[in-house]
Every structure is written in C-alpha cells, then in structure tokens.
Length: 74
Image (cartoon, rainbow, N blue to C red; front, top):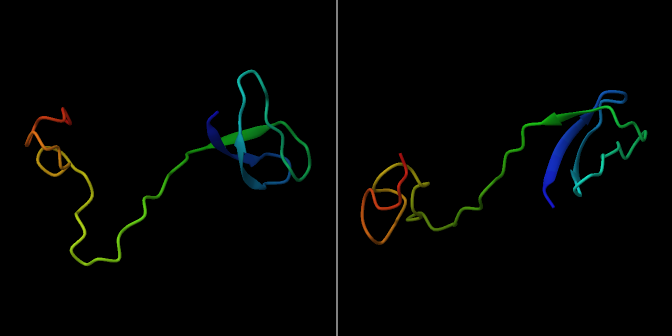
C-alpha cells in the first residue's frame, strides 16, 4: 500500500493517505474526493558523525563492494 500526498481542491488542506488498490482517497477535513496528487519526497536520516559518507551518486560513490560501475548507476 503506497502512501501518497494530496492537496484538497475544496479546502486546500495538504495530507498524506494510504491508498488501497481500487479505492479513492477523501480529504480528512471536508470529505471531498477532488484531490490533486502532490510530488512526494522522502528524507534520509544522517549520522551525527562528521565523518559520515556523502550521499550516493554515480559510479564510485554508492559503496558497492564490487567497485565503481558495478551497481549499474548511469
């Protein structure tokens, strides 16, 4: 079950909803079903350690133990 982010077109409330297959989400404030799906972004927690690794990037920085280019990131 994916979590989607929506904005209600009636009351402008922004919210997240678990969406089951074949169901239509509704605004928790006003009950409207005319919603705009928002672009979801996610956050990754970082270590407090100042020597923490840089975020994953292309070839050589993802940490694949087989070496640069092994993870097939382009």
